[in-house]
Amino acid sequence: MSQNAYEKGLDKNRANYVALSPLSFIERSAMVYPTRTSVVHGSRSYTWSETYTRCRRLASALVAHGVKKGDTVAVMLPNVPPMVEAHFGVPMTGAVLNTLNTRLDAEAIAFMLQHGEAKVLITDPEFAGVIRAALELLEGDKPLVIDALDDEYPGKDCVGGIEYEEFLAGGDPNYAWQMPEDEWDAISLNYTSGTTGNPKGVVYHHRGAYLNAASNIISWGMQPHAVYLWTLPMFHCNGWCFPWTMAANAGVNVCLRKVDPALIYELIRRHKVTNMCGAPIVYGMLINAPDGLRAGIEHSVAGLIAGAAPPAAIIEGAERVGFDITHVYGLTETYGPAAVCAKHPEWDALPIDRRAERNGRQGVPYHMQQAMTVLDPVTMEQVPADGETMGEIMFRGNLVMKGYLKNEKATQESFAGGWFHTGDLAVLHPDGYVKIKDRSKDVIISGGENISSLEVEDVLYRHPAVMTAAVVARPDEKWGEVPAAYIEVKEGAGVTAEDIIAHCREHLARFKVPKHIEFCVLPKTSTGKIQKFALRELAKSASAIE
Image (cartoon, rainbow, N blue to C red; front, top):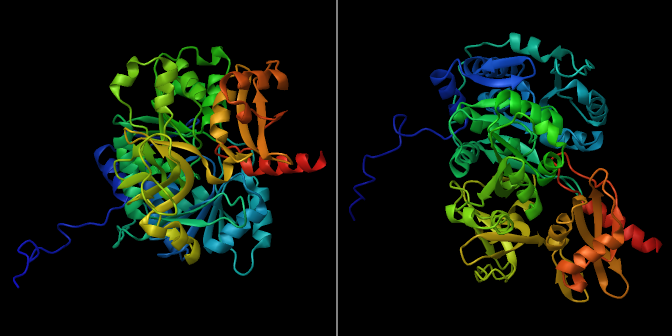
């Protein structure tokens, strides 16, 4: 049998094949646009040439302190320049970057440092207390701790023996880092929220990070040299891969230590911000901020929204205050967004409520993701594209994690049948767009009827007094469980439980109307997701007391 002519003598070599890695993006931007602004933080700013040099110094200094391929370097940082630099300097050494959730307690941080076997920890003074307590809980060798002081933060509480700028000064600005030999090499470690038991360590590879960074530009239609405001925490799914995206885009990273509507609008006005990302609650804060904060902003800001299925009211409101919202969907296990509600020009002619309904769907796969669909989790057959038949959203492709660190069982379960199982229940519309109906654990089964908590929440958000809302199951002797609504109201708004129930009865079948209404401050994660597991426990406790 003759050999395939297209294989004979046509092998991979150094001239025609290079492993994909987002590290190539910063190298290119530093060469092509050396004097363009890369990072802005308060009164400080850097060019792409300067940021590239700082990343090389970081890599060199880490290697000098014994960091090698496969080691873990953890960071406990807000959205500041060292966080941007860590996304390049750490993988330049072949090590793996572990961005820690800055809202977690010492016990959770200690677990991640121990489980990930962190050799180095870079931390901000704001978190000194938590880090100090976490380090005391560690068994065996402790990581080298580097303190990254920040002019924008008054605290100077140091945990380690060396400061970040001093550490960088010891590094070689011309450090000759190498691209990974294998694009399947790990680039980062991100822990899931761990609402039950210990969190799982999600491992990303260079190939996936490269492709999703590029997909952010292509699937969103980002203009070159975008000005990106960091409203999304960089620790969350590596900022949805946007540190690498902005290097590819040769744009400007506008840093932001914490979400504050007044500061966000100020930075949008000052820097002519073009793009930002966030959870629905972030946009809700901006929508409900005093009108005066938006004075002088005459341009529209493109915004990605994810983290939970956004209520139509949020999409409508964002449009009214100058944000052009695009809905994306994904999980920690899919590098952040791996699907987008791709817009159609003809939707522009629809009334705003119908346009918001279309734009609120989870959509279709990102350009660099192979497939996303809704399957029956038992038969693994695709559900009918009728907009009614429920199934589970599943992904397949390059924008799916390597797996869970040191957890082969969970990895195999998540990839059963050759698809990544998200746990999100959804329908498939005739046009191929996916629409989430609920998380499998959030469906309320009342008297044998399934109630989508998201459907009820969408109605609640349409009440003019409601700022934020969440609906969970509450145990009930007669019905098994019933919907319970937890609501944050807008400042100065007057509303009663009876008002909310009457509003819901206008838009929902009676069995879907919440039987319990509570006004409170909702528990949230650092990325703005409402912690429904906490509300479920609250509802369970309240039911037991009654």
